[in-house]
Length: 321
Image (cartoon, rainbow, N blue to C red; front, side, top):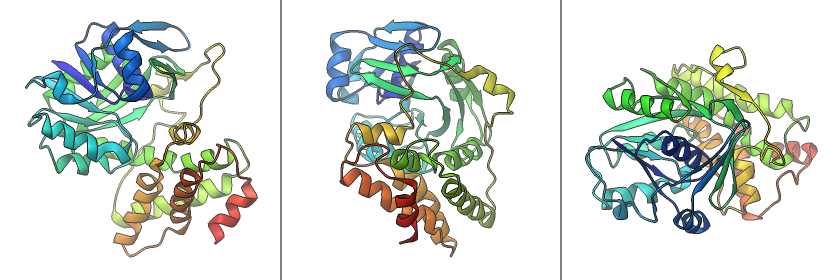
């Protein structure tokens, strides 16, 4: 078995480094400065307790890797980049191999199922960041992160067991789940605040807005009869991913904040808050707070705004308009 990580960003890079250090066959697909750095040298992973340099074979396109029947693909690009990645995987000859969607939100598994029959979900708990080309950080320990995995839309299979064993060897806690989407729906509730963090910064006194966005989502879930579970502070598994620090490396914020700081042309907000809006509209409901936050994400990216550039008052005004 070889694990092909499509997207060697923060999550994909952390996983690839852990697998490579454990001796698990792994290859990556990257672009831009990350591709150039990893073609020239090792992948550097820092955590609160260790520093790893791992050599990961990397290519710009999956066709260059010679995909085989025993490969497992971890899709680790942002959702807005998923269709392009899936198209390239299909063009490269991927057929029945398992495709694992590591992204936040609920949209990627149905997208992947348009192309491939063997789709799996991954609920990712891994506070991490890109520090620079060829350099990623995870800010928890003793494990690099914690995953729940399973078949989409439900169940588990031998691929889940094999991947879980490989990830455990790579210092990523991993549990196969018969209903992985119940975990992803719970994680989505947390991610609804990503764009709020990007707009006003963390701990800005915006608790009421966060609660309103989450309350809308929970109402939609209940109306549609959907369960959810969250890995909250009381979950004993949290002991595997305790928050830590890395000398000289402040926490970089949520993935949305990191994207905004890099000047990304598009944020993932439409696939986070927008997922709730879509579900609400399909059920004949309204989700005005999350709809306003979707518009905000587009505005922030379109204006190349700096993270934390808004005040809470400005955010409240935006939501009311």
